[in-house]
Image (cartoon, rainbow over all chains, first blue to last red):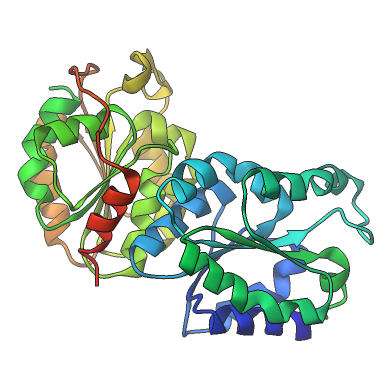
Length: 166
Length: 184
């Protein structure tokens, strides 16, 4: 739980107070933490694209929203990111589990893993790639960046970093 | 009664509400009737009007209405289950159901064949679901806004058809800023 706790603590320190998730086993601990936390809003959501819309509304309602999802969810959300979040300059934090990276046992996850960074680059989304626990210390810098630039940012968490966070 | 007639009929009820209006002709028609800072016009991301409204309603206390269409709800059908499980009492979803994709040339949608959004909404867990003819929408909306204990999904059946309108000349950041200023 150490890594998951640290991620949530740093997100909250950055002012994130509205959380959605489309589940991933690497995010399971964080979901458990958020479900018990009465100081923030948390809900699951059936699909990432829909979650982008809910996050947009939450920002209009003066919250700082975060959507947690697998990297596959980025693929489901491209138009919502470009034609909603970026069109209206709406800061939303994407907490993305980097499935398909070394250590991954499910071969089907490999395809999206190969293009995840290219998608984020193409969409020009500032990305914090977390491979070690120390990288998590930069989370607040990125949530601040989202607020200042009024832009979505991504926090990409490696498979290896998350997989043993029991 | 078509969408434009319906929007004219309900326009006075949108006062003091935070309005999320669907992309394309619905927003352009609403703009033509009466432009207001409490109207958030969608310029992209078809399907997400109900989701944006839901996120906004959860995040603050003012009444929120999402004006949506049958084609858009069909594109983001899981929104009805999220609304059924999570919508707070200050949220109303108005689906203007004309059985067609108005903004793209009035191609028929599945609500003009076998699909009932009313049944989908009920099965998704939405408690107060009302299907009405366009004319009755104003009184149903009034009921929804007065009821402080329930969220509503109102499906207003209207005829297909559009009026001639131009693209909205507002910058997206202007739409965002004047809308967000109304929220503390």
